[in-house]
Length: 267
Image 1 (cartoon, rainbow, N blue to C red):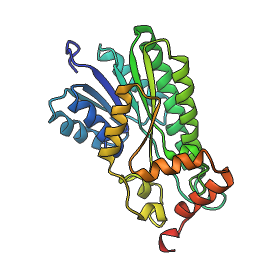
Image 2 (cartoon, rainbow, N blue to C red; image 1 turned 30 degrees about the vertical axis):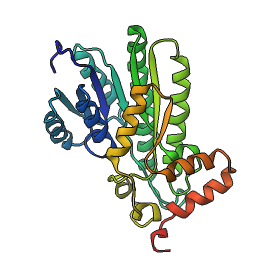
Image 3 (cartoon, helix red, strand yellow; image 1 turned 135 degrees about the horizontal axis):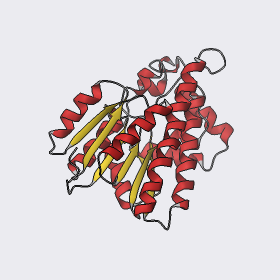
């Protein structure tokens, strides 16, 4: 990483594929240098592909579900010798299935460590630096699942509800500092998420999904405009998010169940 570069500098987590890779691509195409991080070795190939856009891209293979992993990423940021102009806290994982009988506790605790704890941890580090400098942008990848109960994704939905609330609270605290916080709320998106979450046999897993490139573009534009949140993707997502603010939780939970219940793809 070139510490003397005049380009703005962004950090993207979970950037090896899906929305994270497309967010990193947005930054690269808009003149940012990058540090991207993910647990798998494919982050190295992602950095190579992003560098084809003319950006200076560094990568880090790291498990952000671990405390030391977040500290390792933050140390890498500091070693660059550059202020972080934007950070996209995107790394996350899902777990699908019947919470009481079928899902694995360790997988759900790992989900909390990655989706919740690592987001709080990294924000704790970067927000202070940005506030002291008087500028910066923070993007959280939340979800429309944040605004409704999520049966058969119970822990995942709760993790996104936490992120949504956390993002809005930190945004308010930082409102006079020159630092903005934006929550990106996609709906079902064409990534490896549903397969990894064990949801291939669900209606939402089997149905047509949004383009991650479009979701990322809307998220990037909202971040750069300083918006508090954006519901990205199809109009259906905006309708669901609006309905969730009007309908009782019991109703939206039942609607979500119809999409996420195991075996619903065949009904």
